[in-house]
Image 1 (spheres, rainbow, N blue to C red):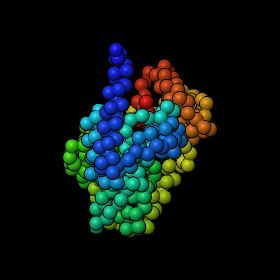
Image 2: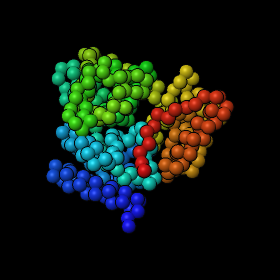
Image 3: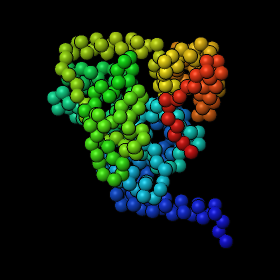
Image 4: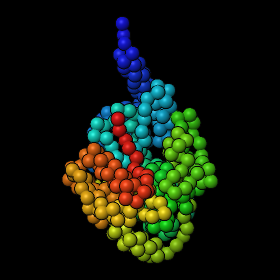
Length: 310
């Protein structure tokens, strides 16, 4: 007699087999990758089933088949807001990076695929004397991830630029106008509605190139208060009425380290992979911060970072 655990394993194996047959028919083939090489934290184990679609139709097909065979999936951009598990990820990993990074200009309108780098978009806009995207030069993120999180800094947000978003849930492609994107502080409707962004249309303005470069340099100067060039995932905690960095600093945790992970001595809302940190080091450090701030300040910090893994 087959017990329930064995039956469940057999069912999952059968689903995976069917999934691989279907993706092969579409000439979509999985690749095994090391997640530490695909996240800015530089931590994480193996992902055995990573797919690299090149257009929204391929993206739609992978989503459709993942849902059809009830397989878990995760969409990974540039990995700048992600903490990957030491144990890796056994689901379907959909990577939107250089394979999905075309940027097209038509006058003052830009259409960028989800895997395009925000800093590259800002650079190309400046070269064409288009302003409004200067702050994107400071975000080490993909366009799709930045829109999903409504990323921003120094009073600027990605939602300020969006005209429309093309996305798919695996059952067709839909265009969301800006007012249907549900933008708010570090959030959008794409965090909840099951749609994955394929491309974004942005509207910028004409300006003097020198003025654009001056503003970009000014913003970069402000950014120097953050641990630039180090292995971080950006801000760890969302800000409330009191900035999270201020709360953490006042609790005496700035510079505190655990294993290879450290709360940045430069900016307390950043955790740095200082020396071969593991996901467990970082996760434990996050818990210590949350517990300490709650005990000393009575405030619950919410994490901005997303977890990827088993």
